[in-house]
Length: 111
Image 1: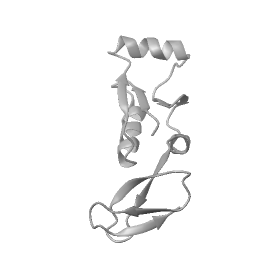
Image 2: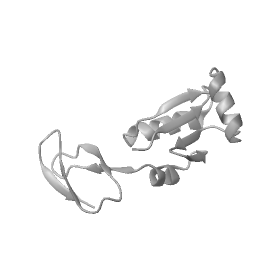
Image 3: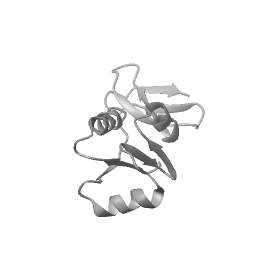
Image 4: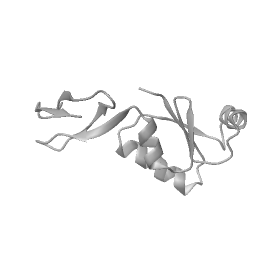
């Protein structure tokens, strides 16, 4: 799985939405608040990034809250168990795979 870093500030409303979006989609991330983290400020400057929220996914940067682009770059997707609707991550681009739900133990196939 690609590492995801989210550059934020405490006062940015879109940053709050970005964090909620990542959590809803079960995407693990490291948050770097550029108001208090000097190293994060330097990293943004080195990359030529001037806005927040900014997602760093692997080697790619997404500036702004472009949810479709973030989901495209993350190498997994969220699927729901057909029996209990528990949401879980599944790898992308692996073709047809069988998943077993950790909650109800139902096995199901997904593409």
